[in-house]
Length: 165
Image (cartoon, rainbow, N blue to C red; front, side, top):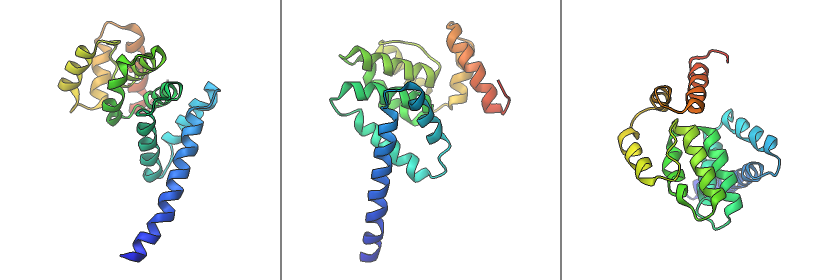
């Protein structure tokens, strides 16, 4: 057992360092570089790295550094990972407008719904849809009233089917 502990220590440190590098990329001042970082993480072959980065992002959401939170929320929305909804939801009513807007945008992109800062609507929607797949959420968005979300859902569903835009 002692050997295992020593063996995991450096890997854990390496994962932490890697996750910190990803966070720096997600918080870059250049939007294009931030978006490239998100896309690079999407194709990251190691689930250990992906999970470590998500955990580091979730930790940032608990920090009082609001500028960084807004950028991380933006990145999380772009990742379109269903398990992130519960971590984004609390920020839709942040006292910092940039954080609230980033959370609302991330959820709209991720869920295909637009409830703004209406936490009651988000909570009701989440309770009803938390066990549905994101594909189902996108199909529901096609039936919605928001033409922007309909367009996004249509494009993403095509991509999920393997069709080009």
